Image (cartoon, rainbow, N blue to C red; front, side):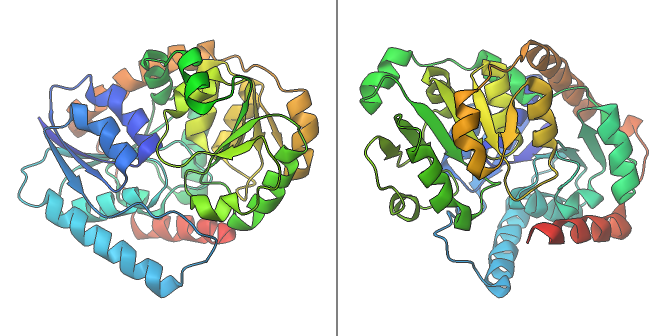
Length: 356
């Protein structure tokens, strides 16, 4: 079996437990160093389809964004062309999914997408041949909201299995590396507005506690200029986030499904900051795990009452879910449901406009 995966960092952690269960030659398309490092051990071939782009607080014009997307889509098309692929596998709701599905559709390659956020999917899942969802409730909502019916409920999140089997670094090694042994982790991810970062930093400075800030999608220099007190440290470069969170006293994060699954599976005390996606599947998951979802101005009080999530069921279901996706990848021809097409694309597009 020959498959291609198109993934950013967090989706790569979802896909890895799946491809481990497939007897397949894997072509991995990425545009970030971290995703490349994660997928390389499982891949026969790696291709770059662009560069990761960290925000510096300056909004790009629509023309610039469109140009970059077209460039990366063309790179994905060239990477997939003439590869005799049986399947393209995608996950998440970022631009890599848009590029991967667009290129695969143009080439007539079957497309399997792992969807985890029914409130804010990427519009191109309308052209996936088959879409997995983590629950029956989400299966119904995809149909109701976007007219998408070619779905299968896998009853969990494969990334939880990845977290379970991740080899954790010794916390003492982490303490020595970062020079502190009692710290919170602040993770600024895809649900963070650049304009909110000054207030988020101000609020964590009020904690009077060491805080290691992982800026992820943001330029380090942009985030650093808002730090005014000792004890708040910006981590520059890639980091083993799972090991860092495991070594921490707690995690404060403004991001989506990936970190929510990770803190749940690790059972690390956590607080989720309500980002610009007021409706988000990660908020639903966080609350179901016992993680408080709060506004920026409630960070101090929430951290004082931070709870340990109960993630045992998350891990158990994650393993079953990855097996289910692997089975679907091998037997997609069992499902004859039509993709949502242009009608679904328009409905998703109108939903996503709320967050621009």
